[in-house]
Amino acid sequence: MIVRSFKDIEGTDRHVKAASGTWESKRIVLAGEKVGFSLHETTVYAGTETSMWYANHIEAVLCVEGESELTNEETGEKHWITPGTMYLLDGHERHTLRPKTDSRYICVFNPPVTGREDHDENGTYPSSPTPRRPDMPAQLRQNAPAPARKQAVFRTPTPDDGFAVWELVENTPGLDSNSPYAYVLWFRDFADCSLVATVDDEIVGFLTGYRRPDEPETYFVWQTAVSPRHGIPFLGVKLFDAAAERQRSRGARFVEASVSAENRSILMVIKQYARRRAAPVTERVLFPGEWLGEGHHDEILQRVGPLAPTTADTTTPTSTTKETAR
Picture 1 (cartoon, rainbow, N blue to C red):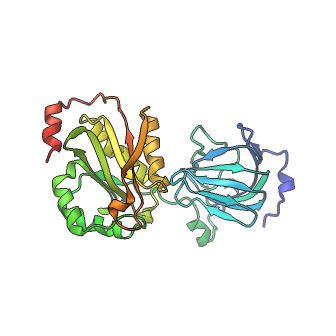
Picture 2: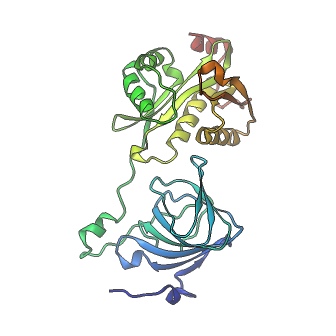
Picture 3: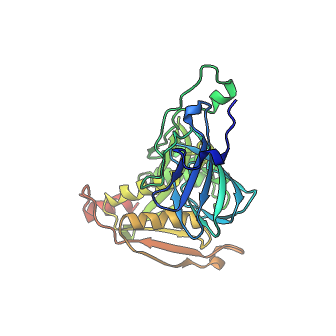
């Protein structure tokens, strides 16, 4: 049995202060205890901002003192964290914490940290193997480092993917419903402008798009969705980036999408893509809601560009027109 207090940790190697000056952590259980998790008391200072991405760990956080704003950087959602509130980063979400007052948290990491970790430039802790005691109970062995998360494979869709994509749309709140036939037909005629993401041949995400016939340098993203079942971090971001970059390599100079003003997740994806490409974003109402039926939101056009050509861009305007004007 181990009995230890946070007061015992003060001033020892287990008392870590961030190089950023935004937090300090007392780490009372570490990988060296060989129990499959680590336990910390972390204080984040008022008026600071800390961006984190635990790509190698799962973290559960319980607030016991103070008030903070938590932003899920993948969706744009904001949460107010107060004493008694827990958040769990079960999808390795990028997130930012902005304390209004000095805030104290009890944190559990799996796999455990070794003791001196600080955030790198991505807000990440390095991965570390977890020592295991031969007599570790089976339940704790299950909490030791999990096998590597499966990676999604991107590929061009085929018409027989249409029904699976339709099912994914039906199970995704907020997406307009279309018939299965629409996706089957889309994957016949616009497959080269679309992508599906698969894990073990299961479709876990998709993106549909096309090159505008009267403006072939513009790639329009029509619809995209991902399934949370496998918890793959940033899958939607990666799908958008891969599809847009494939079209940019084929001569596209603009990327468009229409969204509602409240759809912060796709707005964040678009703005991140534009920022990485150093391209401006303009917006305007594409279709007013009354054109689309009672209760429908305005469709706001987000237009990214002009985009710089890629080094792989050897597409001529003539071949682009032939490829996209179907």
